[in-house]
Length: 252
Image (cartoon, rainbow, N blue to C red; front, side, top):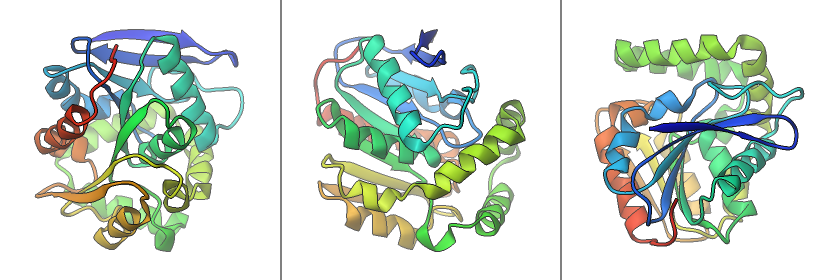
């Protein structure tokens, strides 16, 4: 894997982590709130055996420094797009986990010319659970359903990002209506949830599939909870590869 920083006009250096051969549509992996590209440490090598893959550290997370102001979901999507454009990533399939699904949808709305499809993994925020209390309860329940190694990886990333930036980002995450925006993203969509995910529940994911204006389907990964990119990396890689293969184009 090759890591690079892309300097944007606001002075933010976005960290991109690239792997795989050139020549096909690029899979772009976008992590959730409080997390980093390490969410995809198990998934990225599986995808890289087939084609080009890029994972990102969104502004304020991982190896990307915190901006001088709060970032909205639209800001995160714009930063991602600018970083991809500057590194020559053309046609792409977006893979967003948790809050990363919001960033993926916003990016697809803004750039339908380059987005070939989306895989939304454990997408948030359920309209019926859009409160700090509900999210805290759901995340607490999820920790009981994840393997210890997954919880350790998530906690390490949370601590690195810090509570201040997490809370600032949480406000923007709650403000973004992914279901409404999804009606404007006219690309193929696959919604993926873990069988035991208490955050992205079955009814909510069905609602998102119904909101999509292009081809859409729901895939459930047996045995997984919310962090499917780690606990269900193999079946998730198969879902992503199917969408990438259906949309060939210029890669890295």
